[in-house]
Length: 459
Image (cartoon, helix red, strand yellow):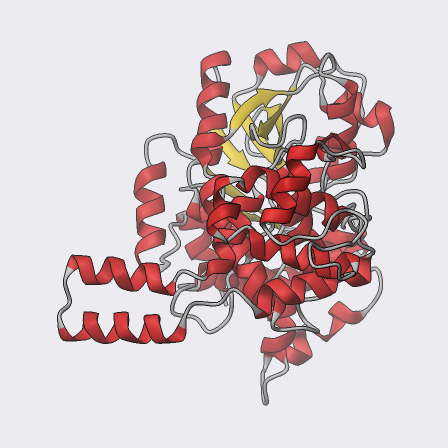
């Protein structure tokens, strides 16, 4: 479920970054020295240029020597000009960025030949510098303007809907993703606990950005912030007030295998339940910024939350997720589509509506589906031609162990559609997180429990 909307014309840069129509004389002199048109579109040579042409010239001016000296000012002007374009003109500007500002082919060839003939450290550095596209420097300088980071994140969000139809834009998208990987690494992220006393604007964002289990209004939100729950948000100083990630936790006894009981609103004493809890279940982790999709915020992000929970609640002995398996149905349909697959006939009943509500039918399907899900989740992902399950990759990369596969853990429509209701526990053992991460990062080996191995051995 996506709760995000497309960026509108005004979302690309805060209005506070605007210089206004009555710019000071020194700014007009700067525009003239750079050969740029003023806000009315009149250039120093008397020519008239369009708003798009003015935006393109501002981007080019960022790379000039004089533009470098006044980079923040020109970047501010560029963001303001970009904000004034309509969606169609902005798309043409994105093409302009993607198609221009490429590495100098001659310089790159010479640096490559030099390195191949004499592979020195200095030669490698010169090659890397020659291969670095000037487009990235344009983006870096755009980031120096007030609100620049937010504007670039919004730019990548808007780009996403055009990538499939216009492959050239992937160059710009890749550059933005590369830069964001540095700007948004875990060292810059600030974790904050979210509770009912948090600012209303942040609580409203928690409702809006919840991407796993929809929050149905303020009453549902109050339940999710009760005494037997914890919620954390990660923020970045360049995006004040804008959460990057929400992590929701339930404090329970034992390992939870189904999400509906966790989300239920009951009348029990939450404070007493929190005192009895020995397990923290991470049941929802939501990335809030569509423009940062695919950008890793660093391994061991969950470990940071685990340490905070352990410090507050020493009674907790187990830290686990209750996670979806969003890629399982797609993988299984592809597998069953192969010729002479003996499992195809057995699992044909999955196309029947409501099979999960019929105990006889669901129990007949259970052994095969559980075994196949275990196979799907334990493939050595780096040697496979198929991508790993995205949720599995996230948790295994963060050092978790594949602990348990749960039958009909989520019978909501989305859970049935994605994974036939199956959910997974990934266990975060504080003492083996680093070792598990290294094992997975080395060759894609999935660390798992004997229970998961037993599922794969079942016939």
